[in-house]
Length: 378
Image 1 (spheres, rainbow, N blue to C red):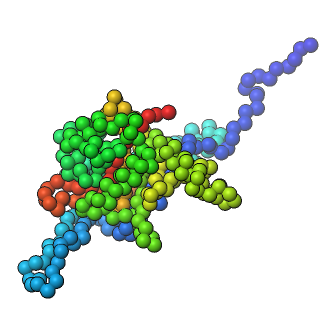
Image 2 (image 1 turned 180 degrees about the horizontal axis):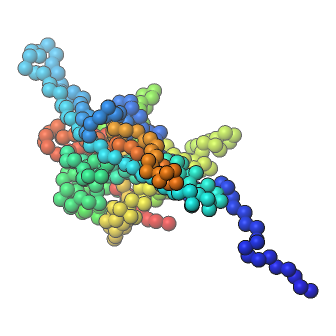
Image 3 (image 1 turned 180 degrees about the vertical axis):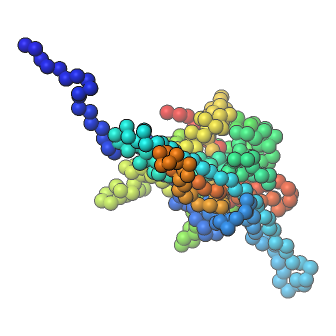
């Protein structure tokens, strides 16, 4: 029996009209961004009317003892203040096609241009915020095309890292104990081991106490009913270590019955809360260690991997906008044959810092403490 076969050119081919875009994580910093003075990441919009740099005035609390019935004249306290500069730079991207390619397209790939560009912008800002939280404060203007203010960690010299380490010695923690600190940043990292210095509940609480004892004061993110809250941003691996450490606490102390299942982190993914600290997982922090801050991959004791955890209070970082993201379209369209769509925005991202009130020179990160913890990859 002769079976008729269908020529390959006559075979029915069906394509889905819906493009399955690669999964792109929303900007996990977004819930903690705002224009209010007590925001962790302050959004500033003063430069929408023009300008390339923004000045952010910072004032610390009064610490003097004052007087009782004695003479106040001559015993006044000066206000410690500082003007921090943030420089802006443009960020632009676009995609283009023409009618010849659109005619071949069975799935309207170019129709996904706008959401793809939106995702690109979210990823870009997320990654630049991570870089800014790790950057060393600097009063110098960034290089052309760079929106992250400060000296980026991977580009900093050993001397620059040591200067930052010394200036921020009261707001940095290496592993489990303040005794791990050393004026040489690399030596302090080498004191961090995978036995005692991972991100556990106990070590997280130590990092909080470091933040609470720092001067100038790191103000908590919010205060409610007499309780203070900070927010810590941790990478994929350190967050896993903390979650393992809190497993018993969550099992014994968190509700499981009824709606408790919906809130118990044993059963639901999401932030961990312990000792007044909201710990948010930002997996890309671990990616930075792997791909950008590569010296940290073997910086700990016995070449252990070390990852940073950013414990933040008010005004830890800022995003200074010159122009919010807006769509753009190609004008050189070759009589309508070429179609192009893009996105453009102008902003600067920076860790908030000020000069140390005692030295008057070294720069101190204003609203955050940085912890370095040993960890491993899965």
